[in-house]
Image 1 (cartoon, rainbow, N blue to C red):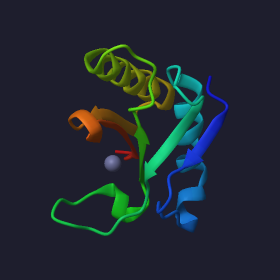
Image 2 (cartoon, rainbow, N blue to C red):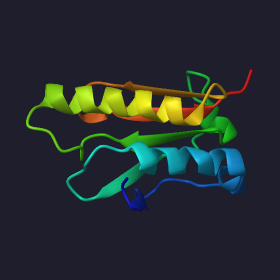
Image 3 (cartoon, rainbow, N blue to C red):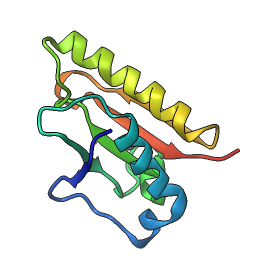
Image 4 (cartoon, rainbow, N blue to C red):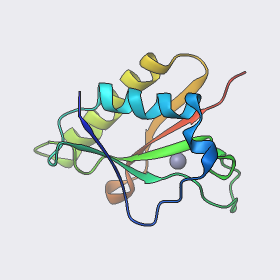
Length: 117
Ligand SMILES: [Zn+2]
């Protein structure tokens, strides 16, 4: 359990991000986060316009979370812990959500979205 949720400068939150099914994503992130260097879970992206790739970020249905503050002795270990975090979040949230850890080095992060089918 990590007590603090912090929002990176410049991240755009819209009213739709405060709906129950989106708040659940933050709660799952905090509940399942690995130890971090600053005892915080950081939201690094929320709304962004549709660009080349269609994304649920444009529909206020996704959040990104920082992985580079995960306590680890190596980059490999940090990525392993990030991937394990994504699995725990997915288990916590259930089938209406998708959670992945992706990107390379500095861009490696958790992407979590509400996508019921
Ligand atoms: Zn994302």
